Length: 133
Image 1 (cartoon, rainbow, N blue to C red):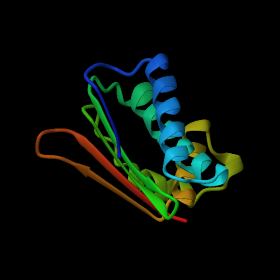
Image 2: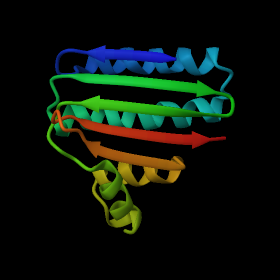
Image 3: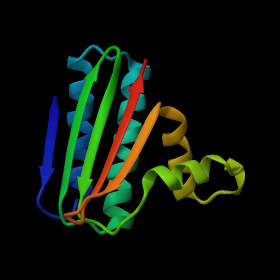
Image 4: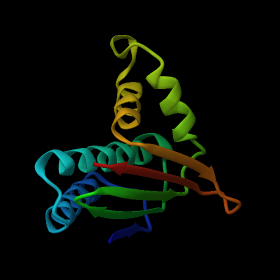
């Protein structure tokens, strides 16, 4: 399992490091190029959203991957943002009419089988995504 924790706001360098770690994990776990791309896209989209829009100072990312699929859990202390609701809303719109942020959420929604959001009692966002191949 890949586990990464950042006790500061994510920088562009951190996102590059996350990408490299996810690619390595996908390769080690036997994901093919297409499966690895799906995992990388989902992780990248959510981490970039946390960095750019959520203003999180703390991020915890866990990825469990195998050739059969993956489970990703992302905790952050950013502003509340119900990823699940916003993703469903975005998927109901025409992609051509959306801004870049909504397109990313739409694609995440179409690439995963299950997406859950929770605002914890401690004040953190918790997003869990599951994809089977």
